[in-house]
Image (cartoon, helix red, strand yellow):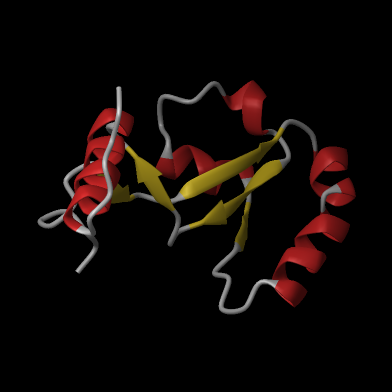
Length: 100
């Protein structure tokens, strides 16, 4: 379950960290290694520019000449207001009072 039915404001659609040049991709390797070392079960993939454009065909190729780091399991918030309302509702169900 990816949260769509119970939490319609949340969607799993991945995340890209674009690298403008091959040099940018190379210099980002150190931080990528740290992420993979210290974030348990992190699914992170290095993509070529062509692979990025397959995922995002309308992207300007100049934006990803160095490729990208792709996090396919990343979640996004599509409706921040709905998230805040769900948090407030849960707080109130737990006995809290929300003041606006």
